[in-house]
Image (cartoon, rainbow, N blue to C red):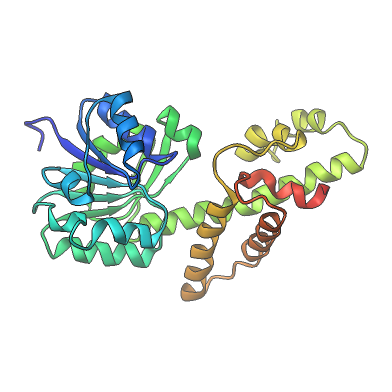
Length: 292
């Protein structure tokens, strides 16, 4: 693959996929994009160059690597299978990379379906949110075979600061579940603490300035505490998406025998935020339940 400019396809130009595909084009890959609404694909071409395709199959036709970043398991299946799906046109020896946060079961299913056609598959969900995608500093958690990973790693590094293979197919998705489980508990703890500080008559920002120097610090505290105090929740990763991710994690936990009492509780708190009309607020909006 190294003796020619690699051709890649990118399917799904949402808040994550749009800049990710852009970085691939800027790093010298020949990029063909596909999006369910063609206007978004045309806008991408206007901004970055490359070309747009009308179907997943035509986008993937001569690609060395096809990247997907869509909504959920069903969305992934809709671009992979069927007459216009990528599996009809991908050639043997090419690689399919799924950046969607989806189930580990789907990853294993796709790995088998791809292998039957001589195609490599990696499940590669990302963390870092919209800002991470726009700055090209995502974390990519990958499942699949090491030989396949070796061929796709450099391309993924176009938009990432950390790309790591964690095990066989499904391992990337499982790692993303670990990531979301961690975030759920941390954000709830931060929400309770900030609400407590306010009710105690403290200057929340001043308290954060002090405790963020010590053991209580976290990415959420560093990046979201002041906006939580200011009642601002427009930072990309929506509550609706977090609930989708937590449902995947809770379902997997039932299968592998893990107790997730805190995660289940925080998922219900997010359901309350949805009932308050906060579907599109970001995950730090957990504090709204406490301050209403």
